[in-house]
Structures are given as C-alpha cells and as structure tokens.
Length: 187
Image (cartoon, rainbow, N blue to C red; front, side, top):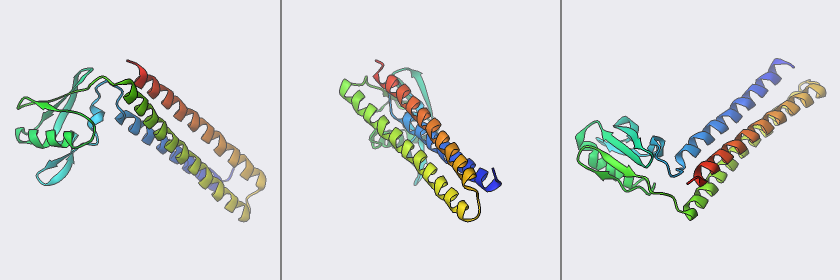
C-alpha cells in the first residue's frame, strides 16, 4: 500500500482510539454506587475569581467505598468547594467539619440504575457514531485517491482494513458497555 493510503488508515485508527478514550472518560463519570474521585472531575470551584478544577485546589480521596473526602489546600476554600459540589447537579449532599468535606454516596435505587444504564448506552452509541464517522471520512478520502491514480484493488483492500478496524473498535465499545452495565447493576 502506498504511503498516502497508510496515512489515512493511521488517521482513522487515531480517531477511533480517541472515540474509545473519550468513552472511557465519560463512563467513569457515570457513578455506579461506589465512590470514585473521578466523579468530581467535572466540578469547577471559584478560586479567586477564576473557575478552577476541584483537583487543583483540593485533595480528593476515597476513604471507604461509600465516601469521598475532599481536603482543600486552603481552609478558606471549604465553602466555595461545598457550593461547587452542590451546584454540579451530581446529586451529592456534601458535609463539612471545617477541615474536610465528606460526600456520602447513597446506594442506587433500581430506577436510578436503569437511568444510568441508559446513559451509558447513549455514551456508547455516541462513541460508535464517532467510529463510523472516522470510517466514512477515510473511505471518502480513499475514493478521492482513485481519481488521483490509486488502483481500485488497493482502495478495496484499504476499505476492508478500515472496516476491520471499525468492527474491532465496535467490539471494544460493546465490551466497555457490558462491563459498565455489570458495574452499575451490581449491588
């Protein structure tokens, strides 16, 4: 295969890997009843007038499976951090003792578990769409190369390779969904 075709195949693979990486990041944010510091990764705190990620102004830890502890680096940040957590729409009710903010992770109801599974499925479908878009974009570029003199056999081989990559990444996404569903439904 010529270099240009190889470049398009590598580009497609990178886009597909990026879709799976993004999916992993999104699935981690979907809580499964167990405490995880990454649940607070989207929380932004008003730190002297600028919105700053929580992880840059406090230490976030998990002392036990149902609790997240947030230890601010400056005592004056306790109230802004507490407000940021409450305003983040995560459904958490932080409790502070003047030094540490504790968040108890409530057990999930069956209905809430079902909603989280639906949310996970939606994220996985978005990842699959990204993978298919990468396949489509690559195939369009390969068709253009035929007009520039690429043989149809090479183009067909490259399309088959792109389809194979698409299938493999689709299976990875399905596997991630199975694992996340199991995680969510495990009591």
